[in-house]
Image (cartoon, rainbow, N blue to C red; front, top):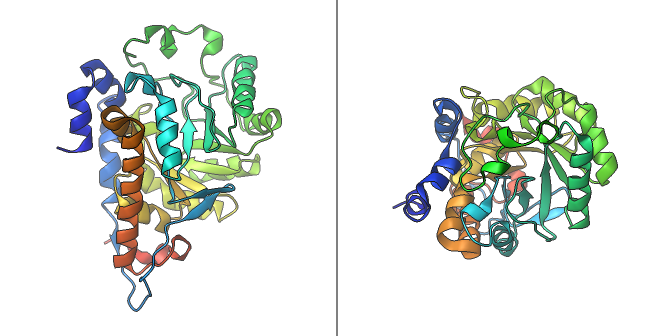
Length: 321
C-alpha cells in the first residue's frame, strides 16, 4: 500500500477528498506526475560518485536536499498538531516549509517561508505578513495564480472557505506586479512569486523585484487543463537566465523527478500532497521520513546518472526521447 492509500485509510473521507481534489475534471492534477516521465536521462560515465552530495543552499538556507515543502492549507485536518508537527519534521530533515496563510496552526521556526495572498483589503495582508516576520519567516511567497478561488468544500472549516469569507478577505483579482515591491517593503524579506507558467510572466516578476519564481499550476486546484509544471519549467528557467532561483512544484514523487527538475533549470522542488499523507499517517516523524526518502532516492539516482553533486546538474543530462 503506498502512502496515499495509507492516508486514505486513516483520514475521514471528506478530508481526503478535500486534499486530493483538483479543479474541474482533475485533468491538470492527474497529468502532473506523468509529465515528468516524458524525460529520459543520458547518464555520464567515468565520474567519481563514490561520494554524492545532495546539499544545496536556497536564499541563504542550507538544505539537506533541494526538496522543500510547499504551501497547503489546514494541516490540522490531517493531524492534531497540524503545521507544528509538519514544521518539526521539516526541521529534522534539514528542509524548509512554505507555510500557508490558510494554515490551521501558527508556527515559530527558523526554517520557513510565509505564503501570502494579496487580499482586496491590503491591510489584512499586511497584518498577516508582519505577524509572519515576527514569528521568524525568512521569505514571502506570493501566490499569484488565484485571482478567484476555485470552489471546494472545506471539511469542518466551512466558515474559512474562500466563498464564505467577506469580500475584503478574498484575493485581489486586480493583482499586479507592484505587489512584489509592496510585500518586500513591509516585510524586509525576499519575495518569490508562485504560479508562474509563462516565460514572460517570470521575466515581469523578476523585473518587478522578485527574488525567485515558482513554476506551479497550483496542484491542479485552480484552472483545470493548465499546462503541467514539468512542461513549463524549461522555458521559464531559460527566460530567467539565472538571475534568481527558479523553483517548481507539481507531481514530484521521487528522486528521478527531482533530478529531472534540476536538469531543466530548477534550484529546488516543492512537494505538497505527499506531505499531507505523511503527516496523516506518521505525524512529524512521518514528514521527516518522507523528506529523507526523497533525499536518499535523489542520491541514488545521482550516483547512477554520474552526478556527484547538485551543482553539477545541467540540461545535458536529459533527453526528451
